[in-house]
Length: 218
Image 1 (spheres, one colour):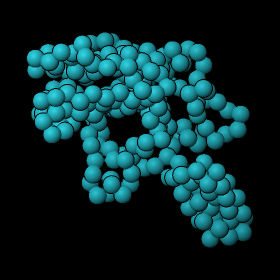
Image 2: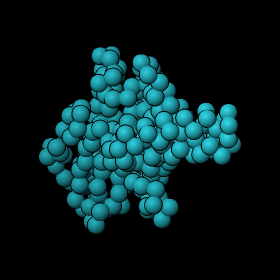
Image 3: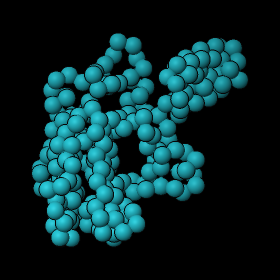
C-alpha cells in the first residue's frame, strides 16, 4: 500500500477528529476510523510479517534433513545465549504473510530475536524459521523493520528522529550495533546448521554464508 494513501488517511482522520470534537460526534468517529485505518494499513496487525518489512535475508536448503526443525531452532537459541550478546530477547511466534492467510490459519512458527539494549534498534527484529521441505530442511533468517504502534506514531512527528524510519536514520554507532547484533545471530544459526550437517555426514564448507540485503553479512 502506498505511503501517500496512508498519510492521507491519517491526515484526514485528524482533521475529522478535531472538527468532530467541536461540532459532530459522527465526524469524530469517522476521524478515529480513518486514523485507525491508516495505521492498520501501514503497520498491519500483530502476527503479520510483510515482505516490504524485510531488509536482509539468508537461507539454506539442507538435503535429507527432514524432521530436524526443532534441533536447529533449539541449538540456535542456545548458541545465542552462550554468545552473551547484550540485550537480546527471544520468543517464538506464529506469523502469516497477510491478514487473509492469517485468518485462514496459514501460519509458520518463527524464533523472533529483538535487541533491547539499544532502544533505536528495537524495531529491527530477526526472524528465524526452520521447516521440512520434502526430504529436506529449509532454514532461513530475515532481518525486518517492524515498529510498534507507539514507535510508528512517534515517527510521524515532524523533525523528531527518536525512532529511525529508515536505515539511513541510524547514526554510526547504531549501525555498528545493528551489524554486530545481526552478525552474531547469523553466526549462531550457521553453527547450528554446521552441527546438523556434520551429524548428517554432509560437508558444511559448501555453505553460502553471505546474506542478501542491506547488510550483506557473512
